[in-house]
Length: 580
Image (cartoon, rainbow, N blue to C red; front, top):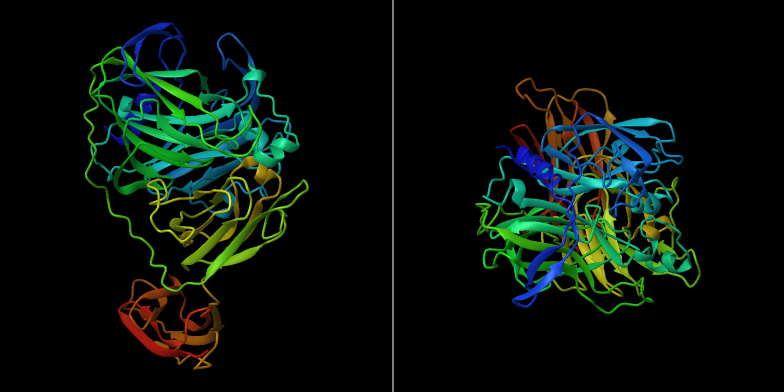
């Protein structure tokens, strides 16, 4: 059975779980055998979205808590929104119909999409209007999601329900992991017990500072959720869909599990763990084995208590139960914990110049800024060349958490405060990274697929709406321009000028018409004297003509560098001297 079909069947099966009922189970938090009366609500699973169909947004009344009505932002009448399941390489299409009374957009979090399809607030869907989002799915298999992203309204719309899973599958990634009814997506969101059954969203100064925090947890929109499981191995896809809460994920009996996936798909190999931090926007997949549990026992997934600033009850770091797993049968998933997955090719940082983003908080409200700037929808804050590897140093100079997120690309975390010994949920492909108070994190990033205007922001949604967001533009590879329309007679790479240079130099090259080549792909790279590739200045189809590009060596040290130009089976190279 195809991976997508197995996930769909699992979600459909989950939707048929029984109504809430009191259960008699043995508490298992410390392997005890104390008989207890348990209540709760069976875990809900939203419907699966039919690719190419409508996503209709509307204020709707649903029963989040049993026998009580709640006003939510529903998609096709569903809260949470329908789950997208799509194979890598397919084209995703959805017609978003906005029946709300305010503007909205849909952002495909973690997904590489053309800028016009990314859900940028510059491309609003006004009340009563619609927009067709369509793009090829280029991402690795993994757990992604979608959510509202209008300027200054993101937090409110997400809190009220505009979010859902976006799961990418890949038939070539077959590692005998648990599948079907044993592959469970869990969207974790906190709300406020005092507001039950309402989703009141009334942020004040306190919420503007720390974010809109709750004291009760919904999983897939289910309060007091439980899931009946067998004595076997399960795959859980954890998504922190909360506005601001940072969870310290662990089991009530401190059992070990394996982390197998981060934001952008499978890791190199499973990593044993007993706890990890999960900030808003992050996704982590884990394998949990219940085979040593007895039928009639249970264990709870929870957020452990930890120290952080704020005032009870709405503060970070309070102990919260997330979902209870009740062991009820001997069904087997047939899944295994693989020894390894496909290896990840990690970027070589070399001697790249870091971009430095300093996060600062002032003493007055509004207070959330990046490099002293609050968000301006019409301002482009920096440009980054397509295909160029960059090293970003993101500094948190504040006493609060900041889960920082980039649109369009996946990062690789290089270090935390200079320490390259990273927690397992950092290692791999990431689009969201948690910065602790006073911490800096360096990431490596390359924008390979699309050009255009994208966002870099804090995924504490109150911080984002309060200004902690910048626009950046992915532009053509560094400085390349056509300087002559005449067709050259030969393939030529001219000596750079000036040479020696400091810090930038210009390089001309000629691309002839050559009927022997079926491709017009041209690649221009720069290497150091040890043969390490430092930059890709061009990797694209070019028409015959004369071209010039500029390379800025930034803070690279003085020395000899080499430029290599390839065209079909032809190769040219030259030596350049950087003298400072």
